[in-house]
Length: 328
Image (cartoon, rainbow, N blue to C red):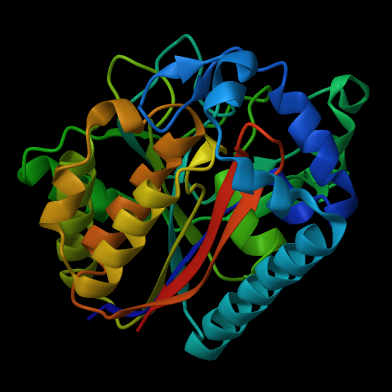
């Protein structure tokens, strides 16, 4: 029978992979973002947030603080890389959000799985038009040339069937368009966590970003529970890693929300996820749904938080809550 041997969760923010010298650039970009999701769950401009920001944030914007936090984040990645390598998985179930990479106006499913044998990723944006800080982090999302990723279509089909039997209407597909790429949430395990290219993945797509069919936190947790049931009923003797990336809060750091998520993971308090107002699961913070789905899959394992790094990058409190965790 299939066995889940490890769970891995990490932020995948460009702030994590661009180099600390670009943190101020990321903060400058926030100033032009008209839809910064505040701690009240509402969208604001930078100028609206600035007067209400905690003045103590200014102490977080010093070069030596940036450097210390950057080093902590890299250490978090190193720990997760080690845990993943030690587990020696035969396949990796990867939970992530698609950001107009695989799915566009022809249809954006709430949940989706790929039933084929391989997917490719490649850079499909004009890098010269990207902000310098974003461009500096592209190595963690896409290589210079098209790269192929092995996928386990048989396990994906088994998961889809199990979901359907338990009232989850997941979309499935078997072909990738030439003008679409596997998204960075799914390439991150390979490029940043050292997942062996010979280990096939099962990408589980969750619509975090595009309303109106975004699943709520409770639904994502229940989705994860059904995926676990499918994995455990798979009649093949394989070792399964469960990997997710994204989040936590951004593009305004919400330490209270991040703490609620991480405390819930450690305590196994799954009910607390269902109490999160849906308005907080928007913008970049919606990637927390990936973590919640992973928690559903990994509900029988114990979670360990490696580190939580509140990556403030502007006086208005913008930035990314970067977190690193594993389950065993």
